[in-house]
Image 1 (tube, rainbow, N blue to C red):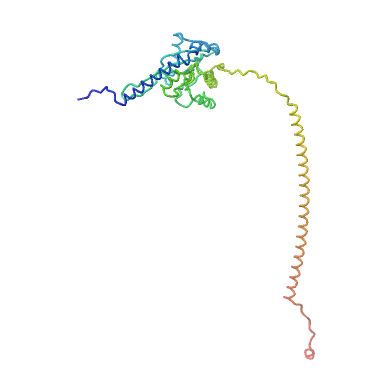
Image 2 (image 1 turned 90 degrees about the horizontal axis):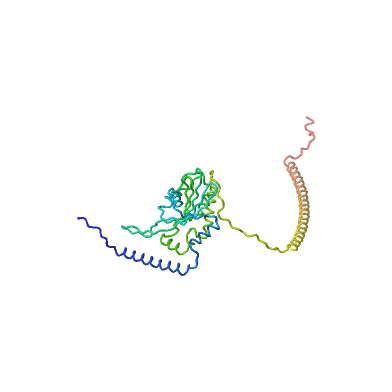
Amino acid sequence: MLKKPSTVFSTLQKRILQGCAVILMMGGVILAIDQFVVRKDEPSTQEQLSTLEGELGLAQRNDDASKSALRDALTAFEPLTGSIGELGPILTRDEDGARLWLFEYTVREMALYRPGQPNLNIAVRHFGILIVFETAPGWPTWMGDSAPPRPPFTAPLVARLAAMDGYRMGLAGLYAFFTSGLETGSLAQAINQSISAEFHPGLFNSAMRLDVQRALDIVNGLEGEQPRLARFYKIDVPKLDIELPSTEGITRGMEETRTTLQKELDALRAERQTQSARLREESAARMNEARASMQENLAASREEARQRLEAITEKADPPRQETAPSVESATD
């Protein structure tokens, strides 16, 4: 007979649930203190959006038609985003041949794995950068699941994309898309985002302007017929009006030093040339003396050898003497 599955939690599961409850309760207390005590004087979300509109030439899109159009575009990138929950806030910028969308969206991420039971999920905000062109640039569909295709990517663009390590990129038809990813555990990221926008990418993160410009630089660099997007973020460096001190005295002193050094170098070079000439003459004289001495020694050696040869020859073959005929021989 089959036993009915037990619905009683084990001791370990109870401890895990108790720990999660404590964490959630502490997180709620921290968020309440942060919202009503620490950040009570911070501008509201609407005030921050108005600031972005004025500074960056953006427009808010909170109507249902805009949200519907954005959701339709994002369906092509579900492998990157997962199932999108809420959308907003949404900002756009229109230019010739393209529209830039900047927005936040939520995705339910797993916060706690529970064997044999449904996992505990939590909504985490992500930041999206979407460029929609009026005409498809002809790029291949790519969801960031492999090496960037070449073309349209070049080696420098691959390096730039790798430097955006907090983002993933995708291409599909009319669209180029960048989305932020999880940088830590989903529960910790959700709590951190509620504490401060600086913890993770988002519309109100101080690095947002730079992130968007880096994304536009990559899209502008892709090979294709797409229109080039205008700059999103530019650092204005004020003209420096600094009265520099006069360098006339320094220049004069440096010129005098250079002239003195040049004279010393010329004198040293002339001295070296004189020494080199004297050394060459002395070397030539010594070589001539050595050559003459060698020739004299060779001549003496040859004469001595000749005399020795003559003495040896005389001993080996003495001279013959002629004798007169005897009387006896004559009488006969």
